Image 1 (cartoon, helix red, strand yellow):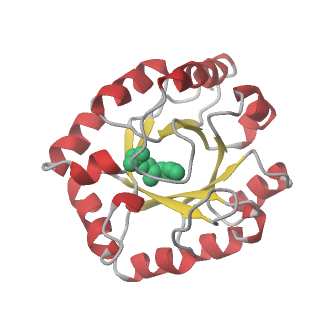
Image 2 (image 1 turned 135 degrees about the horizontal axis):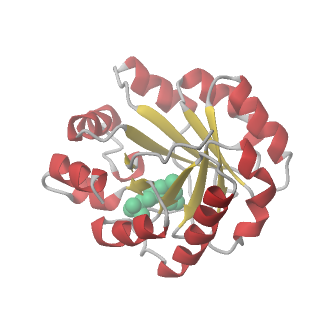
Amino acid sequence: MKAVVPALILAPSLLAGDHAHLADSAAAVAQSGAPWLHLDIMDGHFVPNLTFGPETLAALRRAGSKLFFDTHLMLSEPQRYIESFAQAGANLISIHIEPAYDHTATLARIRQLGCQCGIVLNPGTPAQAIEPLLGLVDLVLVMTVQPGFGGQSFRRDMLAKVEQVADWRKGRNLGFRLEVDGGIDLANGAECRAAGADTFVAGTSFFKAADKQAFAAAFGKL
Ligand code: DX5
Ligand code: ZN
């Protein structure tokens, strides 16, 4: 059976929202029509910054958010926190390839808990590092900045990596989503789309957009 080419999805990043009023920021995402909410979880170890944890996801669910929670774990030991995030309401949990732990078992555990699973590559990590895992994931995330902070500049040199992963997906008839994250706006989003990406994380550009509905609609038609 031929794998279905996925529709385009915008995943606004809560990192660029108002941290004193995260539920309002999540509501603004829902109102824009964007179907996903990207949640950046940082441990001050794998990346030099701290954000929020599972309790924040649970609180957003309690506040009524029905968005698809696209949870990006930037953790040295993500395998220790999978249950907590699944229980808190994550729909998809992505883990990085760079730290040393059992990636295959962790991806399987994520699935077992009823979530979709993703694998993430830092800018300095070659696409080949995740090649053996491609058949096991629902999403591949190619970082287009060094993770740790919002508001950085998009790295155009990552487009070749997006193309490589898209080629593998096509050649092997796989159906995973291909996401880009870091410095994404409409202009470079179109370049990522041309390279094969179908899922776009946007933090700064989304929350700065005066008309968020128009912004989300434009991403849906890249
Ligand atoms: C970076 C995070 C990104 C970040 C994107 O470490 O993984 O998801 O929130 O923010 P912008 O779109 O501002 O680069
Ligand atoms: Zn992210």
